[in-house]
Image 1 (cartoon, rainbow, N blue to C red):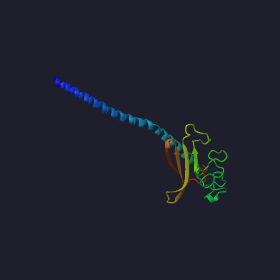
Image 2: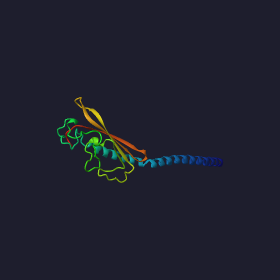
Image 3: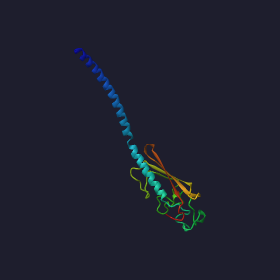
Image 4: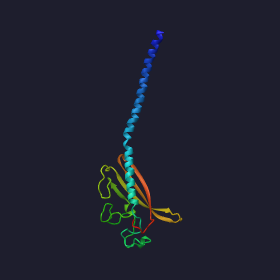
Length: 186
């Protein structure tokens, strides 16, 4: 019986050493995955910030009117096409001297935002938003045709907002604005 105890103790020592090696390897793997998880933890915050910026910009653009004529045009309320405008009809891109941040000639139509770029997020008063210096926005507006319920084509604009941020992160949102009330300035 004494001989059996010695063998059990010898085998137990080997088992303990094997156990320590296995636990060490497993602990290393767990700690390695935790390290990766901690390193990637800011990504959800960056993703949420990208989404908030893109949604805000898309909403700003889509809330603008989509009219035949510039909203300051005297024929706005009676125009039935862009040929009826007293001044320049609306076209992709801002009219001369229009600026998103301008107080004299601000953007006043969806298509004015075509090819708008902003590096470092700024509000509509042209004030830098603290903490968002590493983000950038590009707005692309293009013609789109959507089928109306009657089968006719209704004129629409497709708005793509692309936001880039830290660590090469990028988010694209898309929206459409139809010309549902071409004679309404809002």
